[in-house]
Image 1 (cartoon, helix red, strand yellow):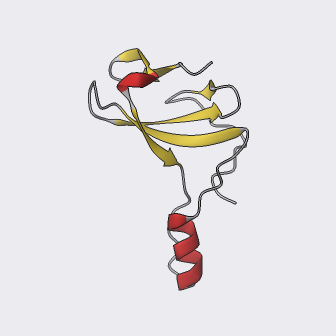
Image 2 (image 1 turned 90 degrees about the vertical axis):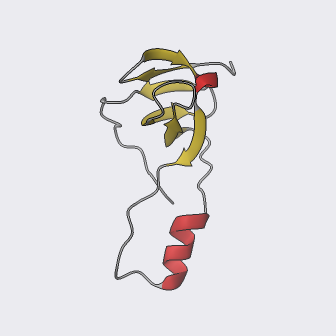
Length: 92
């Protein structure tokens, strides 16, 4: 299944084709982290084979960002905006 629906808090359920993918959710910056750790945080991706927290931009709608939890193997969304993400790692 390559097509799925994302529930936009402003516009309701919409096809993923209305959104642009903005990557996996990464942890917040740590002021005490080394330069190498900060580079890893910003540029290295987990590219998880399974559950992954992601940011999507509603480009063809309200132009807002939404965060979802999606299973990358099946494209099944397990947490929509406003729902708890569960125990999903945001970075390796």
